[in-house]
Length: 63
Image (cartoon, rainbow, N blue to C red; front, side):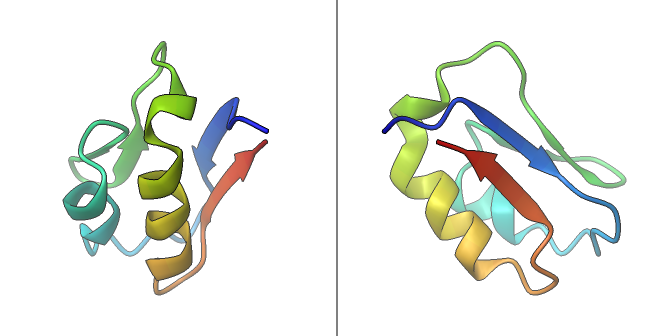
């Protein structure tokens, strides 16, 4: 199944790890944000890696 939605829940610590792993999807400003309007399925492995690597486990996605 392809990833169709990605979001970041509250309590992001702004560590920047997600944007280092997958800058196509995650952008670091004051807090990490998710780029809208792209095909998340194109970056599926990187999104999963970012979610698994998040130290506060706030990255979520729907397949």
